Length: 288
Ligand code: AMP
Image 1 (cartoon, rainbow, N blue to C red):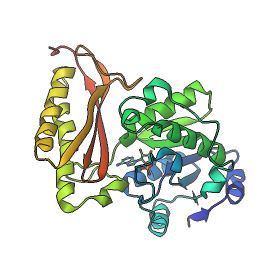
Image 2: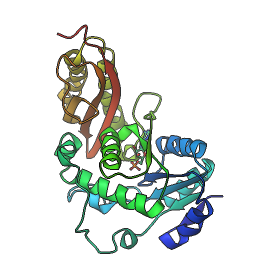
Image 3: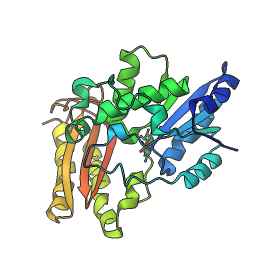
Image 4: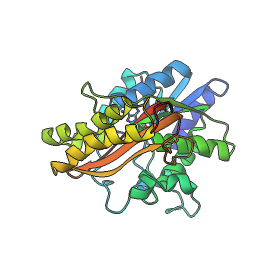
């Protein structure tokens, strides 16, 4: 049985009951799918208490973004949480999370939050880091689980925990995809069947880049760009960015770079904005 609580006071007995055991939290915006499920399973495996938060955070949506139409499916979400053995779903009201209204004090990410997603969604990562910080304070876990799907968010959360001396372990979970490669996302439900087919260009580009991982950074970028260019040429996809970055600071990987990278892409298909990425290990011997 998964308990549903809406307030910090209702959550308190669960946290106290597991005071000396391992407590895990998975933060979500609801509209849950199999990607979220993987995080829940990992948390269930690693922790004694599993808390899932469901909160559509107004602070991370821009004025022209999809806050109002973001899918809210609490009944279905609860069923999925129960299947995964989640102990408690904490779905707070905006007033509990933002008791002082618009927060005056916020967590800002610095330069690493201003590139890629941060460039296309100004203020996004301040909203994300502020809510992650708040929900960590409210749920007080030992471990928090995040998806590789949101690679820049994951990297920034890791930095926040390090830079602010937060005693919390951050665990990442690989991206879950549909069989044809499309990364699972709550926003996929906005896509018409034709748009969904167009959206496959994102993952195809990433996999084309991956095939060139032994040939250096430029070869990876070129292969991924070729796939995306073809999709853009159909007029059905608008590319925001393709980038091959160093996951430590999200700076572009230079042509001779070797080691861990993230190949990241963002594009709009119709009115839906999608992101995807693949972690790649680059070897230099083939660099041009
Ligand atoms: P969201 O509800 O979209 O804010 O996502 C909540 C958490 O689930 C974040 O840590 C995401 O990175 C993670 N997540 C979302 N989609 C996927 C996916 N396809 N595979 C793995 N994790 C995911």
